[in-house]
Image (tube, rainbow, N blue to C red; front, side, top):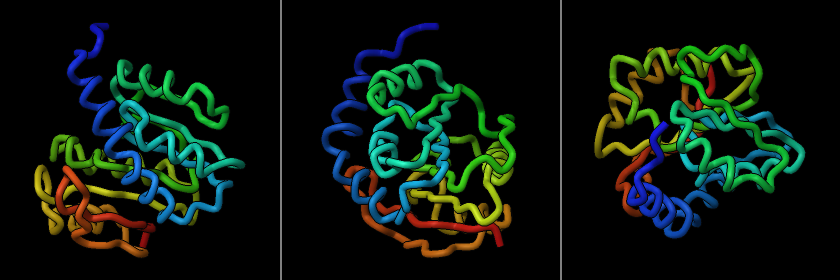
Length: 184
């Protein structure tokens, strides 16, 4: 396995851990987690959002899932002090953990999945959710997928918005769709 390019790591450190920390912290706070949930983060990358999720789950658990073992290794190092976090290198479309999670977090990930694979990813998320579970999502609408395309994709997979906010502006990412969805 080739190591990650240093520029990618430095960029992620600067944007994800330094400049973006407040953005992640506020978003996780606004999710309204009780702190006892079993949460899956799909596409955790280097763990920028995961750190704040782990802190919001003092009596819960967080499973960080990513298809890239190199980024998962960075996340594992960054979150080593959190004993409520586990790590899985897998593709959500093939991963099998039926009903294991109260919430699935997808933060700036869905737009990076090739369009032809997004439905399979959502089916994997649906499989992973416990009855009554929620999809907690934030996606940019300026590249990869418009807000209308995201609405159609989520609705087509059976999700209905619980409290989705359209066009929330996020520094460096632009307009986003953010909020919670439940299976209709």
